[in-house]
Image (tube, rainbow over all chains, first blue to last red):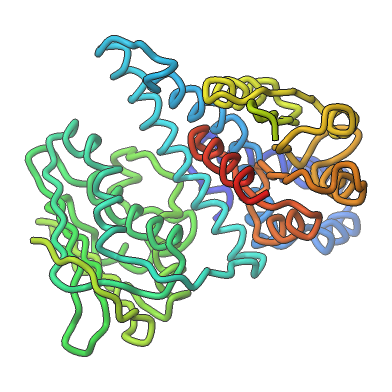
Length: 285
Length: 125
């Protein structure tokens, strides 16, 4: 699994952790040293430990340079420090969007590391899923518009839940980002927030994209695994987004279901009524 | 607090120092810079800033040790410390607060948000 990661960035980072074992194993094999080889096999870290280590290193090593990119771009766009003409402002905004994509990967890998080490402890605060949906739509609006994909939000019911706001945003963002990524120009992506008859809250992300093959529908929720369409068409991504979606939903007592056809996909995150907060929220079409 | 609040910023990454300095100076703060924990401690004792913003992983003295040292010295114990770090785990935040920090900001960060947190720390004094 670890070696199948397609992103060059991840593969290099992984190599930096795995190389001593690769080199030592090669030396042992060359010398015919089966005893040495078996000793190495016993000492070799478990795959899950390696994944967590790699995720942790990427997480830490990327955060400072990302701060420089995001911080500098923010200061350049700031009225007090900018004075940019429209063309240059658009370029700086492109830097901000690219940095946000990298930040998203880092946050996913952080969570992967926390899940591996048992360090994921979601907060329990009142969160408006309507607000989450609006924020996520706003983050993805430019990418969708640039691609010619329509993006809408519909909040049908009050949608407060007790949960981890950052992780819930990450969960919905991963779904919407994927939907935009796999929807061709002229298509559409919609986010719907509603209560089901049993009182559970549902966040539904529907697209008119390429769909998910039946044989991929379980695999795509595994860490570092990707759907065959993504692999065949070289669609970029580390392959952790949907595993994060499932982990966050599960940590809130919820679950994720997916329906798909060649005409598009529909992901529904269902969060239990027990997690619902009785707060007033505006409903907007 | 003087009319112009002074913020001591400690980070071994010069680019981060530049970004934080730029934002805070533009917002009317006086900024003192340090590139490691020991230098930050010396400057804090000497200048008694109104707020300290510190990285964690720095040469000579890390941000946790800096926060503890400031907290244990009556001359500096009143100075609020904000930890600004690439460490992202919950236990990192817990350790920062145990060391005496009043706030914990994860990198990547928004300079505007950091400025707001500095202002909030000043108001809580």
